[in-house]
Length: 450
Image (cartoon, rainbow, N blue to C red; front, side):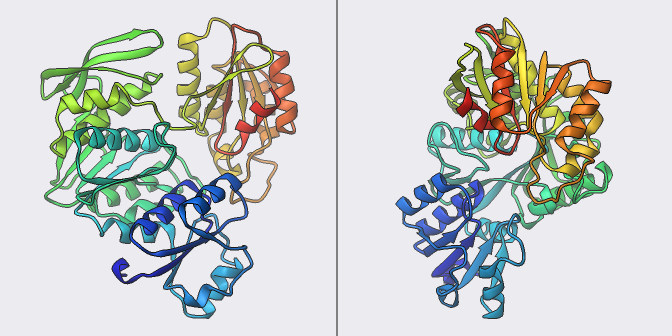
């Protein structure tokens, strides 16, 4: 598909962060853009202000005028607009396929993959490119705290994008620079096991331009099928191409000298919390360096980088005096990172409110969820956010709560809703404590009741 020939485009499920960014990008291309979504009223209002025509979800009157209809993976195939478009022979594309066509509009693509950290690292790289005055457009799977958007348009030489592994979405991309941050098992609804998922990552790496490079965590170098492509590694050890020296923790944040190929250069003073973000910063610097950006620009950008909304985001204080923090963490490793980050600055207890995300993930990773939540002092479990799945007792929030009390080392409670979870958290917290709201659903709504 030649996007230069597209004049009129419609997005079904336009309220998602990626879909919103793509809709706004199409506006910048001069297209007539419309969209529909059942949820996300604030996002819809923002798109309206930008010039996107918002249609009712059952309105199909304008579909025949569209050149293409793009839909998100969350949209059911029975959606009336999607069904009508197909009956009217209007081309339809899932978001992942459309993203692949979008990437071809730019000179080179830099794509960031991994089970964790994709959004933050993509945003970091965009901040570095922006600082360097480079020509790029950034497509981020979250809203940056700096600009409140998942889209940054500053030229067409580079397309910097998050590369999602869900349903093998990232295989529509052909990057010049591929970044693989980590490769832990997730999405059991579309991967049988880690080996099955690894095959998808190998295919992603195989799509990398032969003249480009693969940036990866040092421990993945022997696992990934690099197939003759140049590899650039990052990590904590000195056998990495990019690593930190004189790592220091002060005032809740890390700083370090950036070392590249054995030579120390600029010192980076991290502006966001969490030791996991040191690795994220190293990955961003490794990728940016391969695009010709200096270490000085990397350090300057990361020392000002204020993060992404929903990633260890401070929301003020609860009525109990406890600090309120929301994090998108919905995988055991992400929960562990969030709790460990809180532990570094918490003088009292860490109270976690966790909303599991999908029954299949909760069921497949149950033991790991129990272990991760056991790092907290108190755990409150909500019903599983079903997303694209139907309810099953196995993998439900109540199932996790029962397993926590049977096998975990944390005091756990079950809450049937956000209001009840908030009340429990308030009763268990004081001024020295941190209440962590974790999950990819709507667990952040608990803050409204605290």
